[in-house]
Length: 381
Image 1 (tube, rainbow, N blue to C red):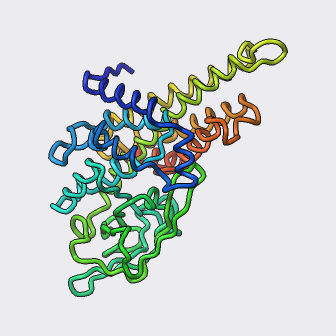
Image 2: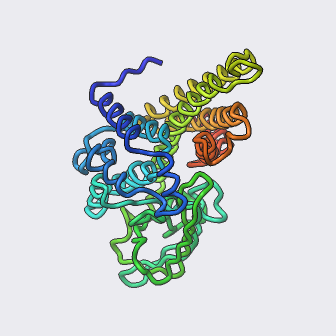
Image 3: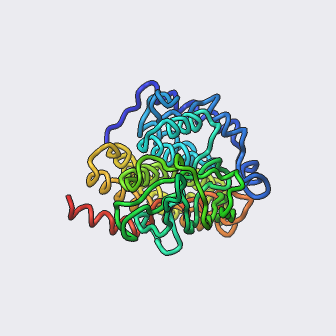
């Protein structure tokens, strides 16, 4: 696949790579994840004010720089390479995409705040009984005068402990799994809203997530984002964008893991010579390289098809998620094995990358989910 970046895209990638190499310390990041706020607010401000990456893929009318899916890919891959825990995909890709498509003055203002780094917005769409199906919504929103009253439960809402707002899916009409009838509501996380309970926790890959209980949460009428019951097409597109972005992030992670593994095998001595000199281990590293390149090609195709029709986009994104998921599993496991027992220790970066690669296989749909979705899209196409 022939793909060449333009000058602006090269500058974006090179500037972000330099910033992360000089100012994003993995040890400091892990310490923040485990004992602090769960992230580094000063890094997030630098992303917005110094680099402008939070708005790089957003239109200029929202305070962005007018980029698109390719800019999103470059940013996500660089962040994956540095194992950044700040919520770029959750906020600047998924939530910002939902708000832009929903429209309205309040949504536009919030997208501008995302681009400027002054607001963090996440999405709560998964429920205890829904599995991986975002269309299976049992959370309900009912009118009470001019207000909306929400009742239901959301689980594993990624990055919500860091957020200022969360977009909650709720059913305003229709049966449990109908595409029609799903609406989006904007809830302020930091406020002491009666009936709103959030349980925050750290995930296996050192990210933060929340379970959310909505027990008669009363919201004003303008908390409804976009029209009532029409959010499903926006959710489908936003989930595909999130899946494509984490595929790019996984490629960045895998490139770093492969490079570190090759370097380790050059240094580790056994039987009087570097273990990288043994042909059987060379073959394993070549297999890792092939998986990484296949994943990179699949991720790029998904990025380039995000603006295609729904069926074409679904096939490309699901094919990428399957290819990248299998590659992440293979590359992560091989890296740990080639490092020996120390590959899973906290002291080595490989262990942290392995955890992230494992988690990425399940974000925005697991490998099995996307195998099924690809088959359905192929029949539909």
